[in-house]
Image (cartoon, rainbow, N blue to C red; front, side, top):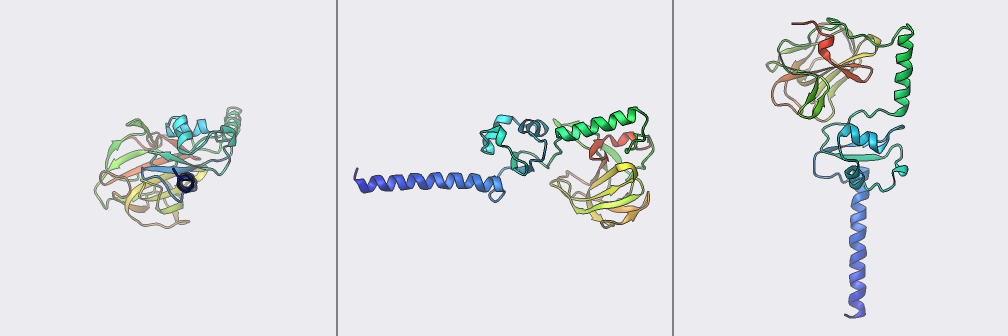
Length: 245
């Protein structure tokens, strides 16, 4: 092999290495995402690779390999991690949040007034007339943060309680058209998969006021309402707040 051919082979090898490493950089920046379904999770203060992997139910070694992480100590706040197979960005509890939550629980035990609403049956009204098709909790190996109520397309969806509209529009992956309403005492309700929305952000609504129409937008197998109840940001079983049928 001539000296000229050897130089050409070395140049080709360096070019291939540069292309591979460049693609990995673009992938981490979100410029060149993988073809498969997934989301980017932004690392926040108090997050660890272990806690992120546990929440998304992914093997930590696979998570390290996909994102090119070799030293766990170099995981920095603001880093965007590609989570393959995830349908939406999930909340990952940090050590700081756990400490704050523990202080809140201790204050409640001492008799101090709490900032959240207890799960009182009938505190909310049913947001739509229909049949319960999916409950809260584990569903097909994943956590279902709310309940699903089947109804015909166009069926009125009403506010489960008086409050202020915090979001109105296309939601995260899978939610389709959605509405989020903030109520007193840090209680929040989420309504998703609408065909049409009748309220705007920052609008104040009354309990029972129409806010949307049932649809099947987003990741949905048919017309229904996906309904969530959250205390702060923590999903609760809506049936603990709704009147029994």
